[in-house]
Image 1 (cartoon, rainbow, N blue to C red):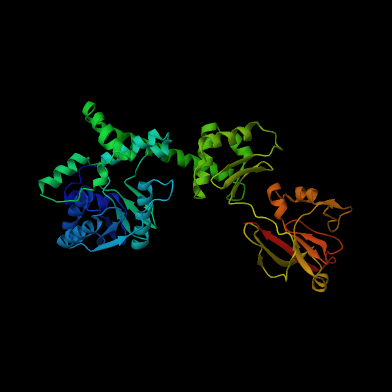
Image 2: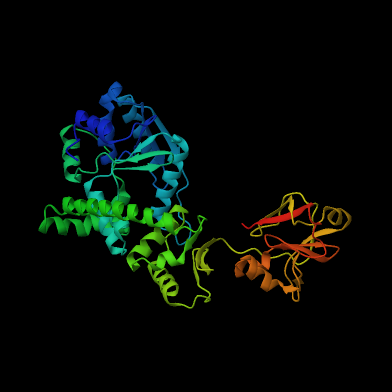
Length: 443
């Protein structure tokens, strides 16, 4: 990236390599790295293409946090940079990493404060990138995880940029000392308990002692992984478009079978990412692919993780989110207006159209919503013979996991229609007349 440790060089990075935001925001902790970034940008003043502000988050986890906030106010005042200070509750919940809790609270507060269209700038540098790559390797991450941190990414309706990502920690420290800067040393940074701190104080010094260019080499490897991740994503985009089964939460299994194992994994990961869902663990992903490729066509595929499921129906892979609804025990009176049936049960509505429920019978009877029960059957309008609910659900393409919560319209306690399926005799409107067609949208 070159050396942006001069204001003019950093200005070139902002103007030539980063998008133009409505406002630049520096995440200013008062530590060494963000103090250097603040002092690099402060003198640029009107040369910036957008206004510059700083934001400081007081996590309330250190006894001296109030003094840190006061220092940030003083430093920003000296450089004539507007500062916003926020205090957040960063206490970790049971089982949650303190570092993760603080990070989540910090970014949530910043996102709310700066709003969309802005660019948040953090002072992550080359050594941070090397540590991030090592942590990803130790977690067994794939190419995307090994890409570590990008210099700029879309975030919060704007961007998150790291303009110092190509600069090493030692170089940043020398720059600060050479200009007699003062900064805050967070005592928690010396603790070896957090994984990142252990890498920083124990592992990286040993690596650098043997390989002085280790941080730069690791950062370069992350850049190679980032480039590979882009190519894989582009390939997966093309395949995913042809694999989607007319619905964002379904994939064609025949299309997945045409792919290699690696390609199919890549497509499924992208598919889940588009839904903004947690990734499927590799073991569960491989289990799903094995069932897709080797199980009988009528086998019940069910892969569950993080409150979601992958299911199979009619050669399609379905993505289900959240717990299934529980059908009501007693029938529910319905006046025909659009109605939400309850958590996980979706909505019912009606419209006039051919082969619907006779309007006169609807008006004269007591209309209710019920669900399947033992012995439920129906003679579909215009067809001979009665059929069980299971047979009708199969004919109408209702997946097994939805059948227990598919609404049944009762008139006078007799089944008049199965939503999204058929109207039952003798409730069908006469030929040439419109009747009420009941549709159901599952959650």
